[in-house]
Amino acid sequence: MRGTLTTREFELQQGLLGALERKELVMFYQPQIPIQSGQEGKHRAEVLIRWIRDGQIYAMPGEFIPLFEQQKQIAKLDYYVLEETCARLKRIENASGYRIALAVNISRQTAEQPGFFEFCSSCCKRYGLSEKALELEFTEGEIISDYQKFSLLLEQLKGHGFRCAMDDFGSGQSSILELQKLEFDVLKLDRMFFADDASKERQMVILENVIAMAKMLHMEVVAEGIEKSTWVKHLRRLGCDYIQGFLYSQPLNELAYMDWIEKNRYRKSLYSEP
Ligand code: C2E
Ligand code: MG
Ligand code: MG
Image: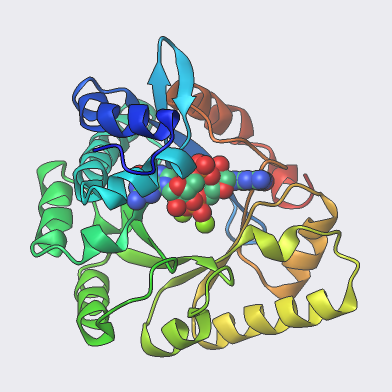
């Protein structure tokens, strides 16, 4: 049944599971740049999926992730990405000697599946990886139906060394409530915080206090979607730990990401100014 889907959505929906089987869903990596001193040399990136056909980007996650979610098939993709991420991490570590931490996006639907923790755990064991190499990003897009259950899952994951991040903080409606109830390790500030220049007093007061609050809750802070260099000095001063955005790098395919690491290995200036 096509229902109210557009032709494009119908096409994407029909192709989703085949795309997974044909390995058309490809992992890209967007570096997260440490901006405080003492963190130099750490390599972190977020894994972002692109649907590739005939060597070109055929669809972006904003188009196909909601379709996977509607079809209740998102866990298939998330499990695939988790498995592949562990495999790549091991491969990169063996080939280059770099210790890299990768963040993977996990839909709430996936996190709520029985056996999710066990899957993450067995993945790390199978590839001989430290759990610390893997960060799990949970978006606050969907309202959590059962805080207690989610809180137990976080406790279990963190107890075994996985890092857990709250993604897109500030973009949804339940941010503060979730922060109050759930003990994440990392807070990812949504890019809407940084849409304007760093010139509006009101905006800076809010940002300053959000970062201060995260620090008091012993969380690391990642600012997402940074495009303008003026933000770097403000974010460093406010105590933000990492910056992720087009200012430093677009999401890159694996080869380009390995190149990026190699090129930026000794560039100390990267950690002070862009
Ligand atoms: P996200 O996890 O918040 O990822 C950050 C998004 O911001 C990415 O969009 C990235 O390309 C974009 N971005 C990064 N820096 C900049 C910037 O400076 N300016 C602008 N305008 N955008 C920037 P992308 O790759 O289109 O992904 C969209 C969303 O799709 C992700 O948002 C994430 O929620 C979801 N997603 C991606 N891969 C997966 C996956 O494997 N599983 C699940 N469940 N969701 C995924
Ligand atoms: Mg994310
Ligand atoms: Mg985000």
